Image 1: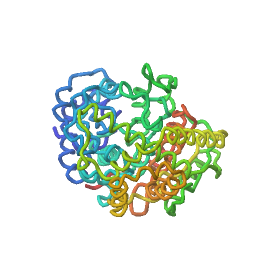
Image 2: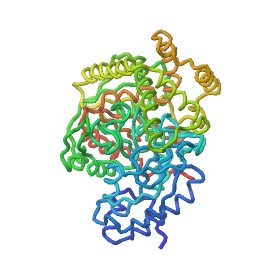
Image 3: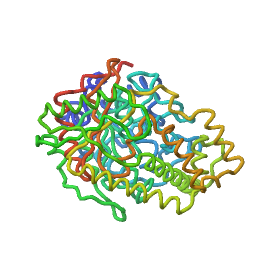
Image 4: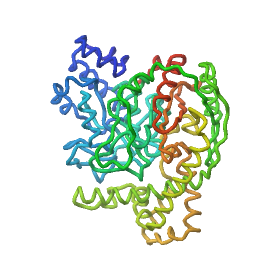
Length: 498
């Protein structure tokens, strides 16, 4: 029996139910997934590593798991599986395999999910587009000339094209929400402390990053997070979670106070389509009976962006040193992209004072923002500044890479320890590097949960997501509201033509 055409219609919960009720075998489901990988991946380049044998060899394991038999992709970045390639989009790590399982990977496997591959990511997850030089660009299935966003771009492309119904992702500055907005998916960045980075890290990127998933249905998102939320011994952040609460939230109908922002805070131009997407979703919320009003938030967006860049640069250096120890050798210049090497160089140039001050700046801004929106259940805002950008437009310019090379060759790192010079450079770099998604890093600083909802589509048939943000620890409200929107503005019928 060829199940492939039917396979593409089902979300993960439905597939799990079909398998459990023996209406289809897990092998038939897996073979349908593999057929689609072989058919679509040459066009979209969403899967960096195929793990068909791994999936087949583990076919009978965890048959009592809720998602038993459902095909799944792990992001080729964090949350490794022992003995499986973990190349992080980099030539430096092309043959590298982590020696340990992450706890999150173990949770996914115990749910019965069958890992058929590792999804594409930019090098070390450092860009808002998934176009690593080592593997080539991942393409948006809605328009192959456009980006999937990053850094969970491979996961987004695979889920949107129906290769898998759900996939692992992570978010350090918008890396779940930006691909979700670009590819027409549900993308929930959970609160800080919901999911552990154990056993290797207590936090990543100074607490800015969190793991998660991308899916096509609100239901899938609710059910999988219900099964993977939870801390481990030694985690620096923990949040209590009541099992089943996200499932119950799928049906709640309470009236919410919703504030919306049809603007961004960095000096970046916002397209009219993005403004229309925000207003469209505000109107949907009003039609659902929620109290909706436009709001203002005041904070120093440039200070936030500059502090964010300092933290990321320092943690890039830390990660590369960690990888040097694990791999047993330092990278060669030819094995890392120019921008990654520059971040490593700059990260080592910053002082401990610079890093501590950047963390302090992020925390002060985060507290101020949360205080301003405390009276709202949900805040609606843009994810991207425009519809999906063209391939290549988010990659570093040649002139920027040339300047990077000059700085590194002449050992000019000392200039980043001069506050006036450093601030001037970062003042220029922030809008240039964050223009596609200028404000999503705010929720990584506050630690709040934020969900992209793909209810709005352009006249050209391209997805243009917007995000809803709630109080820390309150993913349930986001699930409930998103479920309501899904009922009246469903995107289920939308399938890309490949």
